[in-house]
Length: 257
Image (cartoon, rainbow, N blue to C red; front, side, top):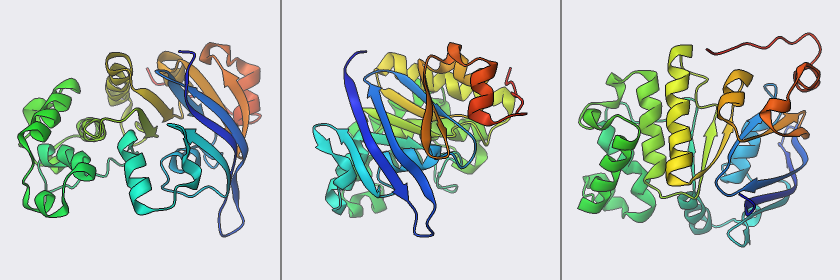
């Protein structure tokens, strides 16, 4: 895992209200790794991921991916092509409740399907087969014809993972993927993200709160504090001293068993 798939250089994001969410962040992401970003709420974790897939436009700096500086992508076509390569799942799943599980997963193919065909549900047999394949990968293929709002939170997040995979991404971003789930379900979703990483070779970059999950799933950790990188290395090296530096004096670690 020596080859970098993504290089972030001096990344700055300042919002219109003057808040500087990222202050010159530098990170190299290795191909095939499971990188976890940690830090307090407001540390810049979500902003970082949203700059990578261009939901937010960086103020300055570079994001080098596929031989291009994607921080400078401005056209709709450029950003649409980028999001084929960099999939994303969110804390709140972002599914269409009244649509079936299969229909939701097929939404990941919108970048390669005409608007009219997608509105009419005229998906190709290849797209449908791919959707079922990824539903099977996350252990939920038997729910394909059920409405999304009939699933549990953990099942909905697995549908969101399958939807992102139908884009054939090189990188999968996961923004607090288990924050809306009960503790018993967290490991199930994280296990499937690790399966995607190991079996498909997709690079995963995830934001997480709980260090117990970080230690179990991350191959490497980056910690942000007030928009700056304060730690980069192995999760096993985050001792009490580092925990206090990242989260503040008096902070207590919460474990997910």
